[in-house]
Image 1: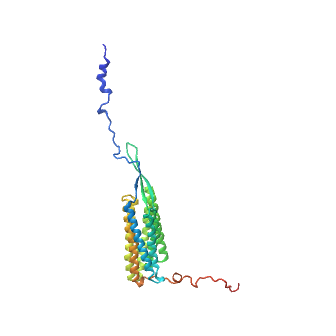
Image 2: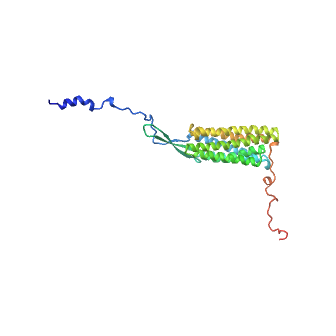
Image 3: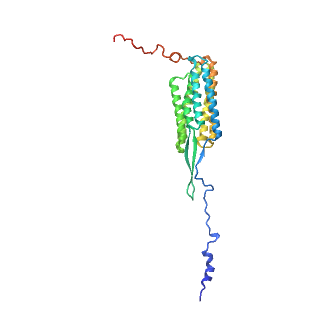
Length: 309
């Protein structure tokens, strides 16, 4: 029997040629692949405009506080000098940020893991205003001195509060610049612990010392101290949703910090100086070297021979 090879090929062609039913469906592919271009999160024209507005407000406040200082004797200018210095440092900081200085970019990589295909990566760069942390490292200790002198804290309590405050600001800066998530939140936790120590010094020791002076000073310290602590408590919240988790953009972060800084510095300063000026019991009078210099005390006389020389 002779077999025709053409007929055999016709009958077996369905086994040799793949059909639509033989296709294997591949699942697990990401629906959206990240682009190779890094995503940059930075301030826009809106954020820059806010920085310029706050710069002007801080400058005006500094001039006003300096003018108020010249209206009182030198020995009563302690609060005026501290408060004017706070807004002066803030003025310089906001000028630097508004003019394009005092910032850098924190680069991080987000890795998305997949089961059947290679992991995908996306580069992010967020603008970090380190000038803000320089500002806080200088202004928050001065603000604490305002409250400490108002309450009458002793030297040891003031030193502890200021050290805790500086630790809080520095660890916040380290957290903002960190590219490791666990490391970032570790620094953040340290900053929160340091902040609790600041709260303890003001809320416990500060309030007790202020109440021991008289009820007027105690009530005023309680009011302005609570105002300050509430504002300071909002700062780490803004950090957490801004630089911490990138939930809000840089413009939103700038606006939030601008409102807080305005309340914590100019508003705080005007409230303190106007109320302090009407309360004789809260005055801190500094004589001696503060008011009169060395004068004859501690001066070095040249040409007088010591007895027995």
